[in-house]
Image 1 (tube, chains in turn yellow, green, blue):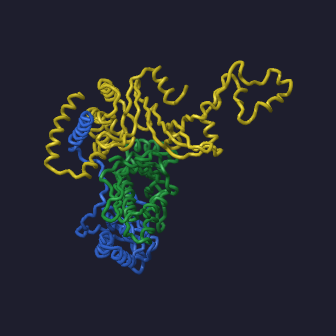
Image 2 (cartoon, chains in turn yellow, orange, blue):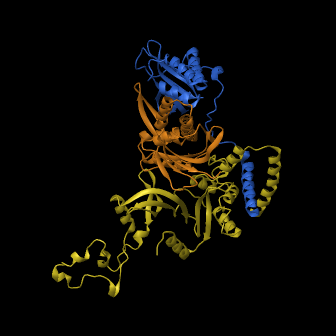
Image 3 (tube, chains in turn brown, orange, purple):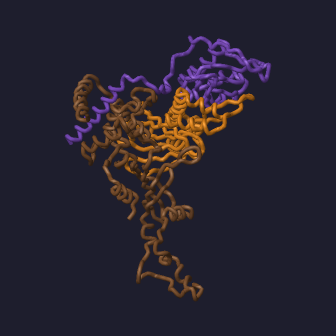
Length: 278
Length: 193
Length: 162
């Protein structure tokens, strides 16, 4: 199918080249064609993925013959992948396209799709220095509509902040402290000390709470957003990520840059990796 | 505007009192959605025209100030422009008024601002407070010349937030229901085109 | 390099295929075009509708505008939109304002009407509206209805998208 399509495209290139020679195309026309081709918003990625709009970004009515038409979707999908650095094979691509456009169980995506999230790389000022901080964001239903929320964070200084020693070398409150009315707490609870040493064996810090606390206290101040991308586990057995490609040409905007077929274990591992967890 | 919008409205229709149900029902009309879409696009285009006047070196100061006021009226209070360039990917933030002032003060003899004939209007999504929010994307070409020499040129993508809300007001004793379409934050990113 | 070129040709081709495939699809989303349209002078004046509601102020006259007033206002809109200079536009604004009770007379703009209900843009006033035409060059509305005070001046204006 794809190959046939490429063959057809090849024929068209000849036609187009002929046309280009016949008429002088102004620079602006060329730029506008590129802008039209660009997947300008995530919204447009969804609409193209689902086959809900035409090439000019105009929505089809649901009763339109073209609406969610699987042939149309296949064509759109072929331009929704980053072609310059695609690290996946054509057969993998075909398998994915066939799955999401299948007649019996087609898959459509939108803001409310399951299991996708944004990774937003930001800069915060912390202890006098600008530092990178990653926010993991998700959409949730709330009130009369929807909202983006922070599901988790990753921040280098937090990673070792609560690293707890175990065994013989760790600090501790000796087992007879109770007889002294725990007067030794005075030596344990000190600034720059390791108060986490005095917690239960299975203590796990909640770094999101620490982050919120630091923001509230003014210890962390937001500076800017740097880059972001989106990760989708919405298609069962598959993972893909979306990145914004700001470059000249016809294959630009929000495009799929990674496509991997995954099993349950791989999914878990990948999520850990993406969320920067040990 | 999209089918989800219709679905949401349909849900609202079921959930909300009969008095507002008529409103929700009316909004299902796809032609009404298109009318609201084009109203939103019109506001965005108005902004483009105001920006041209503000940036135009031959606009007298008092005219530019008046137009800045009008342009500012298109926005929700506190709206910001978040600007990034190819050289500097992190976003710098300006209040809308500050952005206009900087535009007016640019140090070129002549400034040309044009919009490409390409835009994209997102669906409208409902937010927790019940208002609808969408994004209109446009592309702007900017050229600053000194004498006959092109001093600076760029093309920026502008992703413009629009809020849509049905409101009521009294005009000469009559109740008028209107669509309040206001602009919000704008993300300005330089393109490599 | 060659591979990259091939790729971009491929992308262009893919895109062009889509354009061609869909070229026949009629536009579903009529977008507003800010291009000035020809003067609506030839348009028949809106037929006066019977007024079912009792007037709150009986001496006011709510009606479809007389052809002359309609034309005069529409002409002012056109003149302001296409004024060759700021001064010309401002002069036309001043003159047009003379037709109104005062500069804050409300202006309602119908953006959509169906099944007996009308959807409006945010209400504005005549001074702001005339300046809006001047600043944007948008002459996209025509007069639908005027409410006049006893002295015959317009105290409320209802416009509709052309």
